[in-house]
Every structure is written in structure tokens, then in C-alpha cells.
Image (cartoon, rainbow, N blue to C red; front, side, top):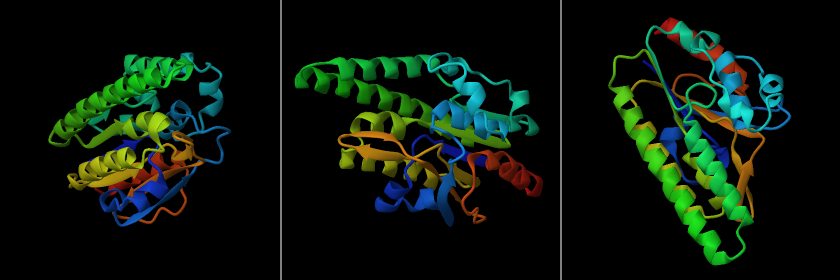
Length: 239
């Protein structure tokens, strides 16, 4: 089985700072996303799945409509596996209601006036994100024990929580340590991959200009996110 731990906004510098050795594996580094005009989640995961830059097509749909994208499996490299399992990936089978709720709560936060109101919205926002994280974590664990030849689990907590709380070092460390524990429990061939990282803007976080990758089998150098379709298929031919 080949496993991809797809972690939205996993930041290289924090993986280093928090000593996440299981996320780092033997080889790790930054992905090159400089070909994209802006590091948008939907753009990057669509490009990952197809192995080609899909920025023009995705952005043409507009900020709201792009979240309705659900690629057919035949248009992705997943189709080349006999029995793949994909969990919650944007552009394929992401929980749109989850995204809309998160966006709505972010809007509430930034339009709220008083500190008390903002604190209450942040608390609900974080609670909802962690609830979703726990559900995906359980589904991912179940998939790892299933009869699949490829499993991809997409985890959004580092991105969702990071947008409102990136300046909260203790909270971000907790998320990264949890992801590190998830990686530690994977015995199969593992690729850890993020679409982009995150940089601090005061208390908040915004997308950075690079992603993160790691493997236990090969130094990939400074790969593009569009390279991974080919990299993964090469591995599948060897296994």
C-alpha cells in the first residue's frame, strides 16, 4: 500500500521547530509552487491530482464556485490504482458544507466588533475544526487497515486553525504533534505532502510560497506539486 498524508498548510519551519521526526521521515524538504500566481488550496490539490497546472481553469470559476469542483477519478492519477481510498480531498470529495461553515465563521470573526464576541467565535471555530479533524483521523485509521493499494488522507486542521491562531505557538504545536503521531502509526510506504505552508501575520496565518514533502525512500530535491502524480506511479510500479 502507498499512503499519502496530505496536510493542508503544513509549514516546513514548524515541522523543524517542533521536532516532528515522523513527519520528516528520512528525506524531506520544500515543494516549489512558484509556477502558481497565488497558493490557493483548490488550485494546488487539483494540480496534484492531475499532474498538471490547473490554476487557470480553477481560478476562472471564481472564489465560490471553485469549491464545487469534484473531478472524476478517471481524470486523476488515482484511476491507475486498482482499489484507491481518498478521504476528504479538495477538488475530489471534500466536505463542501464543512468548508462553507468555516468560511462563514471566519467572516463572522472579522466583522465582529468586540473582543468578547471575537473570542467566542474563535472558540466555536476551533472546536468545529477539531471535531472534523477527529472524524477524518478515525476514517483514515480505518482505511489503513482496509484492503486498498493507495490511501490518501487529507487533513485541514493546520490550515483552518492556523488562519485564526497561527500566532498561538502552543496550539499549533499541539496540532503538529498530533499529525506527527499519525505519521508514526503508518507502516506502509508513506509520502507526507502539503499544498503550501503558512506564515505568521500577527496572531493570524496566511499561505506561504512553498509546501512541504517527505519520504522514507528517496530525496526528491525541490519538487513541484505537479511532479507527485508521476513520483507516486513510479513507486507503485516497483511495489
